Image (cartoon, rainbow, N blue to C red; front, side):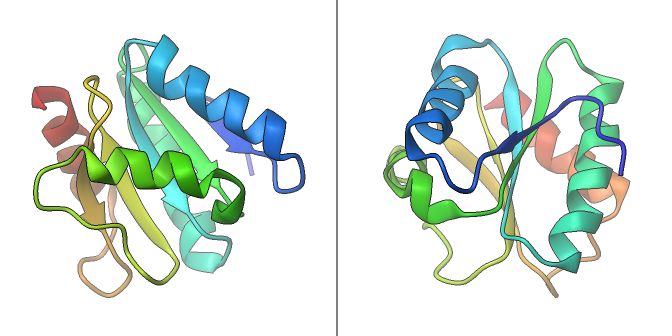
Length: 129
């Protein structure tokens, strides 16, 4: 699997995971597409999210969180600042984050076919914030 613009968050180093997530969210002027979980749906989605983000690499990044327990406080913070969104109780899921550091749009397995178009729409929602 070749990923060009994706940050894969470590699964066994909480300090590094927190540092990477905080840098991506708070230090960079980009929107994020974040895949949470570690199954076949996530593998397929992160590859698509990477391609979609790479098409507008100046303002988009993809992130893969395979072990969300390591960054649960950060995830909770992103959703607590969003309007009307709640963090999904089960894995996996995909969501975007605005430049204002708010969760924006969620895609769950079975809701829609996560194709390039739906992923791009999710990124665009985050871009307009």
